[in-house]
Image (tube, rainbow, N blue to C red; front, side, top):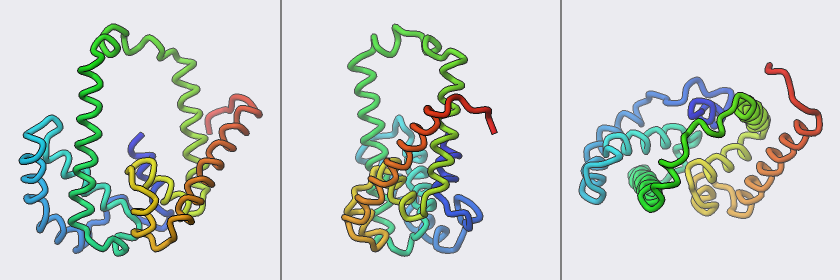
Length: 192
């Protein structure tokens, strides 16, 4: 699933998710050790492992189409790592607070073949819809919903106004909803 989402985030002209260029090499050399140290100091040795969190932050940065629009890449990396850790700690806290919810019910209870197939079809519909969106709309939506960036942060990053970012996100949601509604109206599809 992550591969699908990451490939959607890229424009069709982008050759690969992680562009191994000099900018990324320099950024990695300058900030990798410092970022890992920050994570260990403020959040401990894991889980999740500080190196995994740092790698995730670098991957999210590398996936951004217009990295030049980010004024302070170091700050972006540190904020992204912080957000990843906060989200993971929330998930762990929820699991600890409700162990009966996660342990009492077998995982495969609701994974019938029909539900799995329905989920795969919905994913295909949403993937096609995202790929069909204008690049700015798709990028705004993915940065907001997958990377958790605020409209203001996306506006600063992209150069669009905050209201334009909100409009892009609203239109993306409407596009996705319309795609699902259309698919439900037509009925089950044959996999393409």
